Image (cartoon, rainbow, N blue to C red; front, top):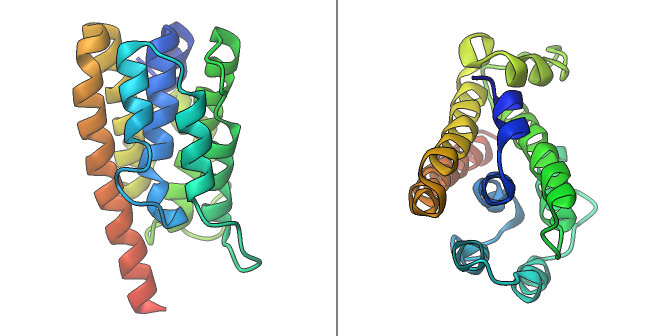
Length: 184
């Protein structure tokens, strides 16, 4: 099943986990530590209001600087767009936007991507699969699919594994960012 189909079929918790996982994987671009979004995962697990923890996480991040690159801007927008009130409509729109933004971020950072590759390939990859995607984008696409499948199959019990998938993706992205900085 494609990522687009999984998002369309996901329930509110699955969508919230999907958006949160995308945001969590991209936190290294914003200088946030690994625990920045952990309270949001806890609120998602117990179904409680996450608005206070969301504001705290947003306030913890440094303000955008004039030299912030496109990948960091996309990551910042994901967190800024997170709905304080998890209504089904707001969560669905946020999860979908986070999915696109995260794939674009991975495309921007993937050394295997040609600068002339059109960004609209992300839509095709979301509707199809990782076969035609570059390595970093394909791995992110697989992570997004896995998070939604875990929540669809295991409900609340899938949250722990979804968090593990997010942590793994964060490590990968941190390594890519570190390598780019060394080569710059």
